[in-house]
Length: 395
Image (cartoon, rainbow, N blue to C red; front, side):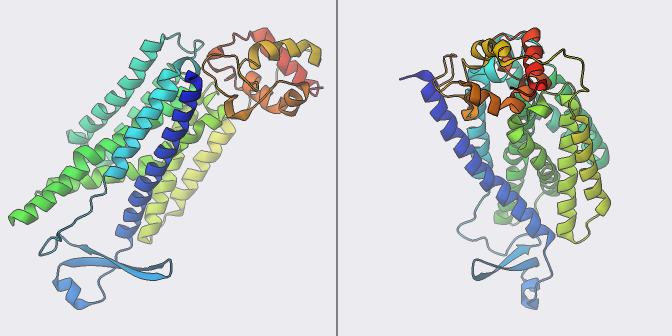
């Protein structure tokens, strides 16, 4: 069986599974944050005597629901207690296998860009894995240090650390690989927060209740801190998961700056939503997020036009498409590792090429992300010739 065919189907299954469990995890996380921020004093005075600190009434799907939260714990634990953890763990597992398949098995295409850093495949994989491990160790170390006792100082240090990571990744990998690894680093931190901090804190709460003692408050404080970090990491992580569709960002010469800015915008927008849940949204926070997003768009504008020479004819560029583009973008690709044309884009006939002229110019000349890793060895003169053809109306 063809290896590219098997890889393609593994990609589909892993991506689908990653999406499903990721939706389950983030959906549950967002719901409980919303729930906590909407708690009201219980309507029934008897509930307060039972230790219930707040409740939420809701209607959904044709039924009425009430959710109640205890100040500490009920007098007696139920026989079955649901733990929200497997959604996070399976998101990490499926995401890691997908990362290995797309960015490590296919490192020559998706991860390595010789024009950025001429890495060998083992070197690129080791660096990628190193960022995942080091990302957690540095983050966890900062949180557990004296800096972790002041949320403002810790937030500033984490911002600085993420900025350094974004800069380093964009100077080591292809833009696409750098963006994905930045998101994978944050996503790994989020899941390990659940595994090493949040769930152990919940276990301590249950154990203390069973043993009839007061739980150590440090576990609750650490769990709350990490949960806050997780919710603010979420939108930047989700952006990086779809960023491979936006070559104008990851292919930009200032791609690391754009990555930092759009992550800040996502975090600010999430802050505003949390404030809105609590009933005190600050319009300046939302405005700040939208302004940063607008600034990102402005900075990602294409480079100023340069004199690339007179318009070129299709006859001049057709051999370039045949040699540099069609090995991948054909009905049956001849380039090793491709079972089907990427994103279904076929550039086999003059009509198909002309129909996608704007996209070709953007990918080949403006953002320069195609061919990926320059695997078909397109030259600067050939890129310029394609730009000249597009300048002349792509006739």
